[in-house]
Amino acid sequence: VPVSLTVQPLDLLHNDRSLLSTDQWSLLSNVVHCYDALSPIPEIQLTMASFATAPPKHRLKLATNNLMATMNAFFSSVWSFVAAVPHFTTLPLIIRQNLIRRNVHHMGALNGAHICQEGSFHDDPFNRSVAFAEYGEPQMLLMLRAIELGILDRTISKLFLLVMSFSTASDMVQPSSDSICFNTNQTLAVQNIFVEVMFKYMIHRFGYIQASAYFAELIKNAMIQGAYLQQAEQNSNHNDMIQNIVQRFEQSLISYQQPRNVLSSVIF
Image (cartoon, rainbow, N blue to C red; front, side):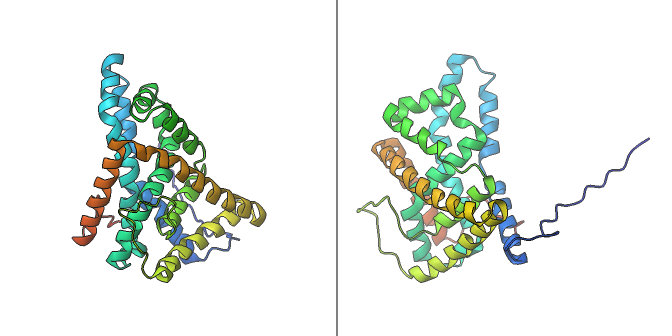
């Protein structure tokens, strides 16, 4: 006898005792869905699964050829995510360009830690071997430590990416390309929207005391991750990749096109 099963949608607002308003819950939900829709994790996992059936010698060659493409996904996918958020697209062009130039390194590190934790890219012995050969042992050990500092709560991790994407304080200063931040009040006003949503969600999850300690830990770890990532700038291939990403995204902003996918299904 066939059994009919009705699946009820998750009602986050049922008996909700959080400080989040209905609009803030909607924003949080849309942020999570937006990131997931543009995440490279399924593609990376599919590639890794196809490698698994190859002979060891051929698998090592595939991992070598795929390394920089995967690293590129770490850094570029996060800006596809940010660029799909209306709060970013409504900012003046010069501010958006400035945010990308200042934050591309740090955002790539935070997103890379998230992807590695969820996709287990760094756990594959062939990927690890190739990465050590490309970046060198000292730099890779720092990168692995940066991954360990990644945020375990996936919802908070995605919100924190947006918080940091609107940061006007870059700890990765590059004199040749750095520029003055214009209208920081407008940028900080947008950043505060996501800070408030994230912190209220953290209070909802952990309570005020634990949320406060957790928030401070996020900022501290993000600064440490940035310091670790500075070592990667010594790698010419990595630097070339970053410059290409910045140029591609700046051009997409000028032409009013999304760098990757237009997320028409997500309504903020």
